Length: 239
Ligand code: ADP
Image 1 (cartoon, helix red, strand yellow):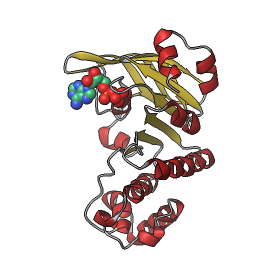
Image 2: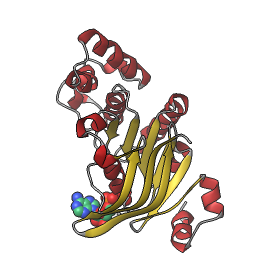
Image 3: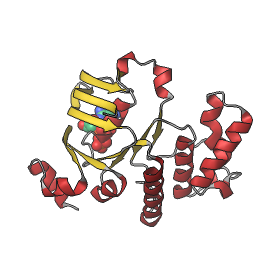
């Protein structure tokens, strides 16, 4: 067994209402799990719970064999990186944005530059190193935010619809580049999208969340062939 994360009988409440139920989910080290479902289904809630930003009303999440509530918050935060729909860059040059997290972690300057350079190159934004964040296109900004996440060398990468604000053509290229990188890197990644095609492109396995419940996990083709209930079937019909 090589699980990084195990979830059992999880209930997350938001505003006193049930937002997400996960009976059982294991996430293997190195796998990319794509979480798919309609808007409001509970996908972001799952990421926030994994980041320990939302606490369970009941049930448990274990990370590396230890309950999340037993982890030191700072130690845990340093294991994960979050990429959001909005890149949320600081008004400073690209290279400083990419290096910022390392600066906070006290990494020395020379190493910081090398690591930032490596990831700017990997994301194809090294030629933009000196440009200020406000002067980037949406796609470029999202590439910078990916570099900013990878440079931290996180054990777990959480991505919440990272390309949904980018135009379709740029988005296709970003998806392709990221899928290649993840296939090569084997970094444990959870990628949220409402688009099944993107989920199938990105994930080793797909987790379908509908109506506040994790319904089914498996290979995309397998879920299409054997949807576990009518809600999964009708969601998949749209693709
Ligand atoms: P998804 O990511 O699939 O679109 P969410 O996880 O954001 O769905 O939402 C799941 C449920 O949690 C929904 O019922 C939504 O209304 C509720 N919710 C989302 N954000 C908040 C919030 N900030 N405060 C309270 N409830 C929220």
